[in-house]
Image 1 (spheres, helix red, strand yellow):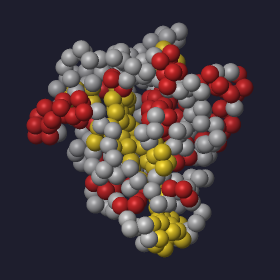
Image 2 (spheres, one colour):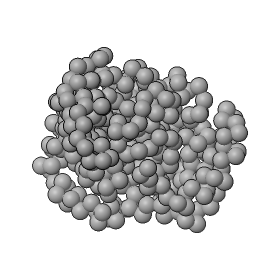
Image 3 (tube, helix red, strand yellow):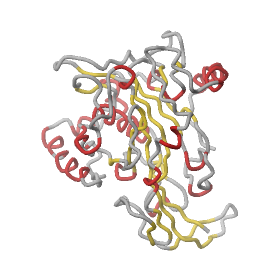
Image 4 (tube, helix red, strand yellow):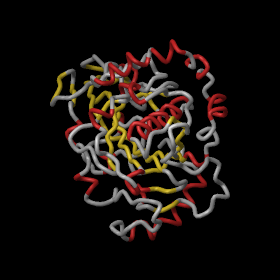
Length: 342
């Protein structure tokens, strides 16, 4: 099973395991770190289960909803078994909850883990403390934590195998921005993604208007990978963004998308849609935006729908945040999966 979990983070999680899961209904142990109550009845009630649809089998669709433009157009497929023998199968595609991304103001704070902190010390802290309230001339900064969250597999609602490209079958911590020096520095982020220089001009930025219009219909333009629709510019791949008053779902959505894009850029995220993904996902250096959709889980869950990357918050973001504990945001990242079933 493929993993890129930080080994030094695992030790901290083991230490937290006993108090964390003994009682997930209690209040946060830190008043500055909110508890999203992920491991409670909200795991059922605050998930958009209708967002699993449409489910496509051999080209036929069950249920309504958006299908990404890059999804496979094949009905049947050939893949080799472990012995190298080709096998005939039929194609299948659906939306799967794949990742959980939390955007937090305070370093090491994890609302997904009951409002606990990974570490009581800032000795190893590389990134800076997140902030949410500024005047109009300043910038905002948030940390993020990136979790594997194959919900349908964890609940035994779906099988893994070839339809689980990255091999994750349980809840895992994959990445933390506090240990990433590029997340709080635009300059360092440039050295990990030097293509930033190509898009720092008025022509490239103005092209994002077309992406915002396409995202409003639920179909962001994958060719404009440097744009995040109505949310802003994808580059630089850091946690710094122009701010608004208080925590804005637009900003936290942008940072969640940048986090995913930065993992793609480093070869740590998969392309799971299209004809080339039928026999297993492929490492893809630029984020295929149409492959993903987001739904807010906390503080105010989207239970009836999810939204495309870059889709204006006027359609989905009203009333999704409130001062205090409601300024840490959790997003469920939905990923379209094409696979070949025998």
